[in-house]
Image (cartoon, rainbow, N blue to C red):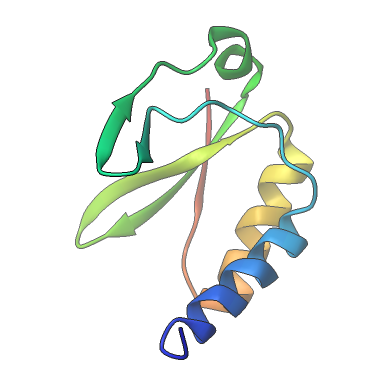
Length: 92
């Protein structure tokens, strides 16, 4: 657990900075030793208006979606401040 402490702290810091989230069902979740494949709720996906994208190993990686530009800007700004990453906000 000591090795994971920095990761846990950073995750909690990001979560607080991003504010309240709208839950979207996972496409994959793990229960015990089994991987459970699911589909996202179409209404939750339809509400997303902006996609957050970063480059990972030279390829675009979509991190998620936001329902409004203010939230998308807050997420991008925090990622730039904390991780030093360039973040693309893509209209959907």
